Image (cartoon, rainbow, N blue to C red; front, side, top):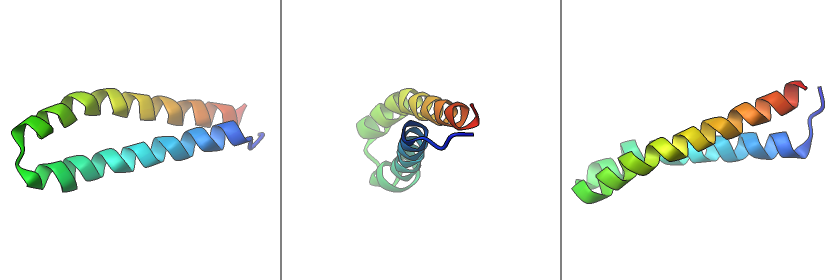
Length: 65
């Protein structure tokens, strides 16, 4: 159970990205009513969420190893 820097950094980055994405979708872009921006966010959102979840999983695996 080694708490190394890489896993902590990966988890922190993953959480920051997830929080940022939720803010964009529910707070920022959602209320602006900009269809193009919303569409870009939705498309990019899937990729970024997958990346953030991957970072979280990697971080947890590194922590548990």
